[in-house]
Amino acid sequence: MHPTTTAPLPDMKLLRIFSSVARHQGFAKAQQELNLTLSAISTYMSQLEGLLGFKLCDRGRRGFSLTEKGELLLGEAQRLLGEIDGFGSFAASLKGGLSGTLRIGVIDSTVTDSALRLSDAIGDFNQRHPAVHLGLFVKNPYDLQEGILNNELDLGIGFFPTRPPGLVFQPLYREQQWLYCSNQHPLFAQRHITEAQVSELNVVRRSYWSKAELGKHGMKNSVATVDSMEAQLFLILSGGYVGYLPEHYAQPWMDQGKLRVLLPASFGFQSPFMLATRRGRGREAPIQIMRELLLRRMRG
Image (tube, rainbow, N blue to C red; front, side, top):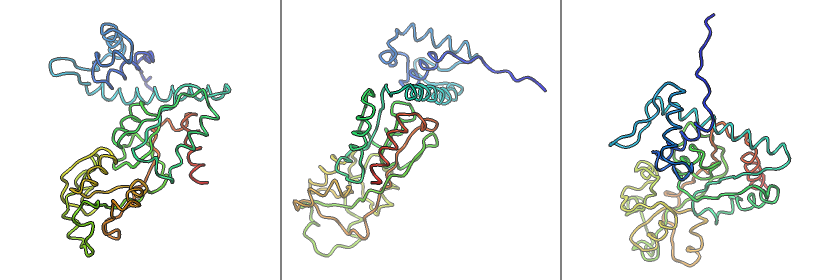
């Protein structure tokens, strides 16, 4: 039986520096996060490359880029760092109390959604673990996923059009969406409207929707793009566009007679909301506790 050879395990500090450099796409951009000089970062990166025996990145006139082996190492390094951070949190919880930081990401305009009991769950978490610093960030679905994959966020909540293999998704509930026009739009007062007529209207598209996604919801003419529900509502209220909005978010303007739902039987749909975490981090104490508190609130 032939003995297997393994490379020496790098110091975790070197892996954290490498992960930061890769995340910021360069030595200079990683300086502030690492609180190191350029020469120190360069020295540490050279140490890591020397220890591993291969080059991790290229720097030059074309900019910064990871080598093929650097890309492969980055994924494993991030997984390993996540496991180590999770072990630290778990050990702290056994000691008698959680500390550190819990970073939650959520898509915009969910504060009006009574189905998502996030504020209640955060209140429960804060009462039980007041020493944990909480960070709450509003982002679009793609930025949420990137943040979780890069360990910049610990968990994310929202609708995710794509689901990368590095993440684990847990269903929460379904958010109702309708197609709206405002009282400034020519169709607002029209009694008889056809599907063909609606599908040809100028529609606002969300930046994280592909044209195929928009077509799946029955619309053809994407003439404006937004990255938030507030921006979408602005354009719909202008009277020049129609667009999809969550029912809970649009309700105040419906009550004021400023919005109308267009052919709900044909153009309504539901967005499946998920709780996303990075694969391998779900058992970390802060993440696990927040997830359980949120699910408990939503069940009851």
